[in-house]
Length: 140
Image (cartoon, rainbow, N blue to C red; front, side, top):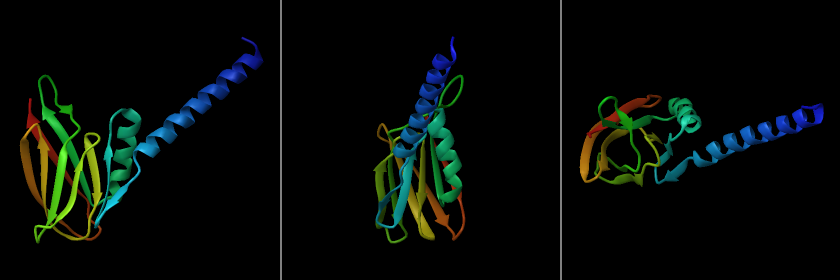
């Protein structure tokens, strides 16, 4: 290959990498709904890495898994409902991937994760500056 061809290939590869990074970031833009700011995703290596790096900046990290043989599998399209101590819904969304990060005010929350009609529930207390990680698991 000549220098011109190598240069052209280098430019194309750099543009492709920049596009992939930009696409991942645009899919992982936080959404605010009432008092909750959240982001969900984690499909593919780039998106999974990006969301796991962002997790420390959120008070709540949810992970969705199906217990399977020979190994567990990530799952998505989970209906997520969060309500505060006065039973007011603070978030009702569908996860776009196996992770959902939420920034919530300090307080007690009831979480529900629903997949194929099966509801898993968990109560959590968010403290200022804290980070909680909760895994929801369903059987195969």
